[in-house]
Image (cartoon, rainbow, N blue to C red; front, side, top):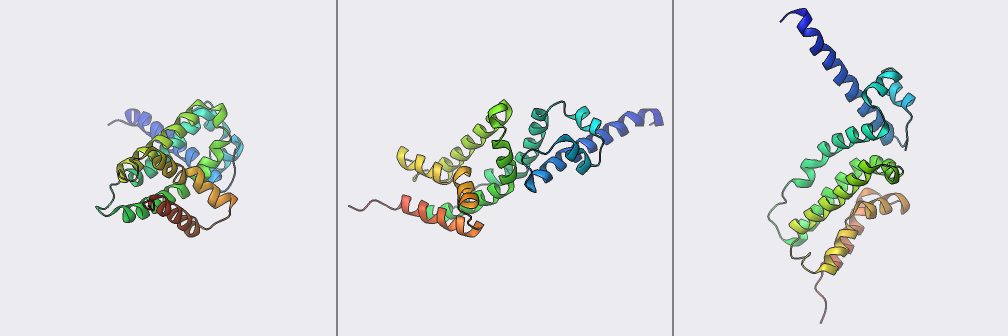
Length: 195
């Protein structure tokens, strides 16, 4: 390969590296609590020029799209991994533990994106997709518990990101305490009704 033919590949690799650093910088800033980091902060954290940020991402919507892909890639294996062939109570405990791990990873991004979701079709669609995927996983992993519509809807609410966020942020519970609350509430919900 001649130096001339290597140059476009080198430029492409550098461009992808800059793009990856910009996405990582935005995610890092959000994980640190910044709901809407400005382009200047992102550029400084990524150690790229401000023009580089705008060259790779023409608007915030395209940056959110790239961030969502990175986050979905991080958590896809956790959500889709089959549960151990065990009784319903064991599977419930595993579902809660797995969701706690996923929700903790996406917490800063979800918190930040909630502030922008009303202005972003992409974020609104991504949120709807996550809700649908979590419900589908619940129905797949706890089919008997989800057979009654009222119980299925109650479990879907109880094991949602919104319930997790309320326990962790508004109620100030530790991860372990939040998991204990969800487990106790879900177990009570699944207990057979007394005659």
